[in-house]
Length: 66
Image 1 (cartoon, rainbow, N blue to C red):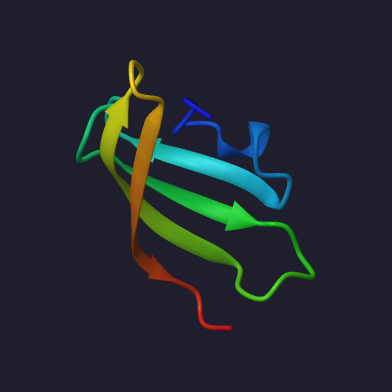
Image 2: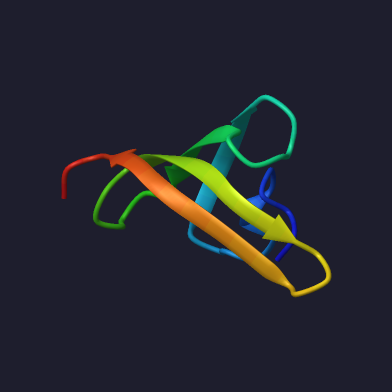
C-alpha cells in the first residue's frame, strides 16, 4: 500500500498512474481507470505517508464525471 506512485499494484481497476514530484506529502498523481468503470480518471494529492503507523492518506483534487 506504500506505493503512491503505483496504485495499480494494489488497486486492480487502475490502468495507469503519472506522478508529479517526489513521493512526499503534497505530491500529485493523475490516475487513469480501466474502461467499463464509472469515471475515467482522477487527480489525487498525497496528504500523509507514515511507514511506522502504516498510514497512507490521499485527497481527491478532481475526478472525471460519472
